[in-house]
Image 1: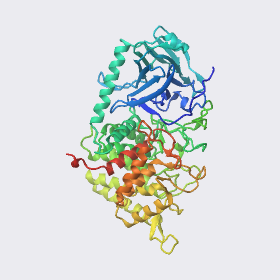
Image 2 (image 1 turned 180 degrees about the horizontal axis):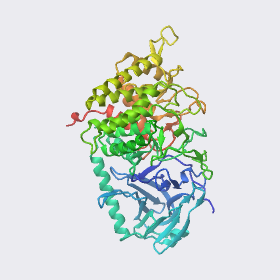
Image 3 (image 1 turned 45 degrees about the horizontal axis):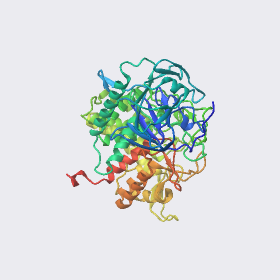
Image 4 (image 1 turned 120 degrees about the horizontal axis):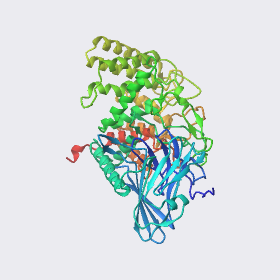
Length: 608
C-alpha cells in the first residue's frame, strides 16, 4: 500500500464524540483518527493518531478535491460535531459526526457505532472516502466483504458493518465522486440496517441532539464561563462506560507527557482516584446520573475486593489484571513510542484509594434525591474499606504520582486514609450507630495526630525562615502539589496558618510562571519537563482561598486560553511553548476547569 505522507504532524487539536459506549476523536480536518471497539479500552480500529507517518491506516476521512480550509464547531450543548470542508473553487461539504444516544424501547440506545452525514452545501464538490480500519493495534488493515449497500470490516472476532447510500464501489476503491445529495454512513454492528437509512440516521441525529440538550439543561452551572463548563461536563460524561459505571482517566493511550520522554501510559482504565475527582465535579453540577452509575461500579469493586484491599485502577468491566505490553505495529504520537497497552500501576500499592472509595459513597447515605440510597449492608461493606485505610495509613506506598521504583509514606495517602475514617464516623452518626461512630472518630483522630507529627517540618532556625510546612512524605523533606488539597479534603481550614505556610512553600518550590509542576524532584524518568494541568488548577483554588482572587481569575483565563478549539485540555503542558502533551481529553484537567469556574464565578444573584 502506498502511504500518503501527512501534510502536518499529529496534533491534540481533536474533537471528542461518543455515546458512553464508544468514543472517537476527530482531527481538525474532519478525520476520525482514534476510536476503539467494542469499548474505550478495546482495539483501536482507528489509530492513525498513534500511527506515525502511516496516515492511510486506521483512519476514516473525507477528502474534498482542492480542499483549502476546514472549520468546525459542536452543535450547542451536544457532542455532535459539524465540520465544513471548502475547496479552492468554492465548493463545500458539511460533515455531521455523532455516536447515537437516546432512549428507545425503555432503555438507552448507545450502539457500538459511528454515524456520519456528508452534505453538499456549495458548488459541485467532489469527494473521496478513505475508510481503512485496522485490527490488532495497527498490525494490519481489516479485510473486507461487501454487498450492494454495505461493507463489512473484519476487525477481529466480530466484524463491523458500514451501511451507506453512497456508492459502495467508490468507497472500496477510494475513487472520487461528485456529491450531489446527502450521503449517510453508519458504521456499527454487523447486522443488516433495518429501515430507511436516510430517515433512520436523521432521526438518530435528532434524538441524540435532544438527549444531550435535555441532559445539559439539568446541570447547575455557574453564571460565568457557562459554555466552558458545559463542554467539560459533556466530555466527562463521555468518559463514563455506562454499562458498568466506570469512568476512564482519558480516551487515549500513550500520548507522551513530554516529547521523547517515554512517559507514555495507557489511560483507558478506571482509576479510583481520578474517578473520585470526576464524580465530585459533576456532582457539584447536579449530574447525579453519573454518580449513581459510578457508585454501582464501586459496589461491585468492593464486593470483589479481598478483605477490603483495593487496587488503584481496574478495567471498565472491573477486571483487576491489566498487564502492560507494547503495540509493536504503532510507532506512536509523532513517532514517539512506545504505545502501551495495559498499565502496570494496577499492582502498585496506593493507599489513597481507600478514601476515594469512601468519600463518593458517603453521599448515598445522605442524598434523598438518589434512586438507590445506601443502607446498613453498604455501611458494613464500606467498613471493610475503612479497616484497610486504618491499617495502611502509615505504611509506604507508590503515592498518587505512581512512582515505580520507590515507596514512602506519602502525606496525601495518609490524609486520604484519615478522610475514609472521618467520613465513616459521619455516616455512623447519621444512621444511629454510636459505637461505630466513636470507633471511627477515634481512628480518624489518631491518624490526624500522626500526620501532624510526621509530615510537619519545623522551619524555625532554617534558611527557609518560616515556621514550617507540611511535606510530601513522612520520610523525605520535599514538596508536591497534592499538599494544596488539604483544605479540599477538610483536613485543614483555609485560615489555618499551617495551610497558609504550606501553600507559600509549595508555590515557591513548584510554580513556574503561570503553571505548576507536580513535584520538582527526580522520579523514575528524571526531572519533570512539563506542567501538570490539574496542579495549576489546584494553585488557582489556593489563590482564591488566600484572598488573591484577581490573580486567580487571571491565571484561570490563561489556562482557558490553552484549551483546544474543542474546549478540551490534555494532562500536561509545555511551560515554554504552551503546547499540550499527555493523554486526551484528561478528566483531571476538565475537572479543574469546572471546579475553578464554580469557585471564581460571580453569583447568579447578581443578575436575577
